[in-house]
Image (cartoon, rainbow, N blue to C red; front, side, top):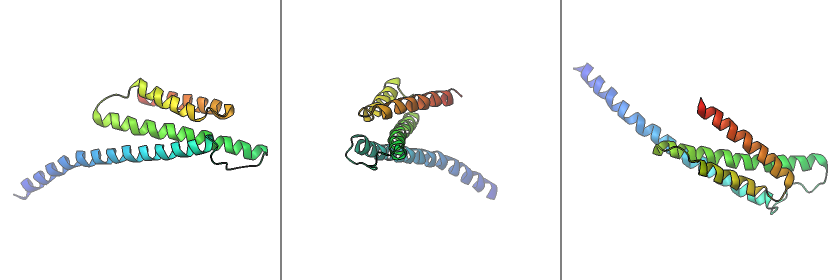
Amino acid sequence: MSKIRKDIAKSESIKRKPKFIEKAAYRSVILSGILGGVFLVLSIMLNGEFITIFTSNDLLWVSIDIVLRVLIILFFYFFMMISIGNYKELTGKPIDFKIILLIFFLSLIQSFKNSIVFSFTLIGLLVIVVYLYVVQEN
């Protein structure tokens, strides 16, 4: 008799795991979306020149400022791709190429004021897209 109860308990725990995994996946979608939004706001503040971090014209500080701006844009793209990709996976649909291009162009628009930031952002975005394409194929 105890063996039957254990089997029932095992089958109940198996039924609960997909709901738990699905709940964790939705949390991942929300958390990635929030992080993407935070990086979007930071990017708009920095690249729109509403906030300046370094006022010195020293080459070191200017290069650090450019690297920070580029990394914030790349983090925005990366987290938004994770969020949308996870959501599409949960709904059972593949991510559309239009959505990838939309986020790609939104990321480039953020860096439009500074040509150096724009060029490094473009290179970084292309590297991320190629990386995600290669990882998806495996």
